[in-house]
Length: 402
Image (tube, rainbow, N blue to C red):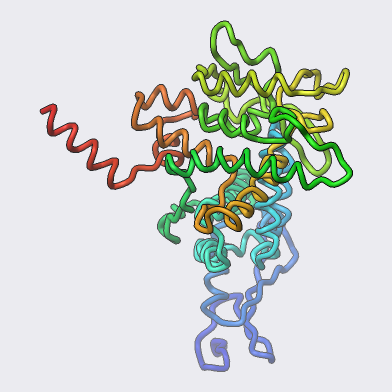
């Protein structure tokens, strides 16, 4: 009986195991019905045996060795290749998440070599890079189904990304900006001042003489603060969508853009996004003012839609980027000339502000409908904001009524 083989540390090697002259370990094996020897390599015996166990399990389960050699990049490509029903916005979100995944070394690993610990370490690395919980969750939502498809195809026997992300990194959430009632009033006042100031600085160009000739976003801000609609939904409104007889707004589409397509119309984010929003007197007046000052181009259409309400000075439909650019300049002007502490806000902050205010006044299910959310959890967890003063007021009111 021959002497059993040992490595350079005098440890017994198992059947199929060996060590090269450079110290690297290998394991050789044959697949059933295959005469060809196959090899795996590792820098340590423990790693080799861990990979060896995975191979043995995969072979026992009938998993494809060749499929297991697919890289993470190739697995993701296969998965995304069959998702043909993604909206344009979802495609953009997936593309952004994929670009971030590609910056990590896991993208080059073979899927059969990715362990649960590797998957968790990937998430920790993204957290250390400064990405938020939701951003990392978006990356995991691409990786996990890509690996699950490989499991279903018998390429690998286990999905390493099937774990709770909150068990690995803290569930942080970016503080969403909302305006106090005083800040809201100041914003609208400053908007009129800034727009007039900016219009007078255009030397050699058209100088407005009346308020309704100013390129102002005052009406848009009043409407967003008074309805809570998304900026893309507001940009998509046409004359037919505002009913002054019934005093309501019909939300049934969004007007968006991409780098490849300047304008396109898409349905709301979900079925719940199709809704009817009542108008307050302030919102009604803002719509009437905006419609009065619009100067549309003749026969301009986007995907069959025309008569958009919110237009640029040249007569083209406004987009969310137009308002965001304007608000960036507005906030800088406010901070430089009026209030250095005024917060940096986005059009979406006006939606947050509406939701937080209305949460204190109307039924949760009604608010969910107005916001176009698919569940009340989103309304509560994402868009509503409760201060200590709100809690005190609610508590005292409940005590008095008991």
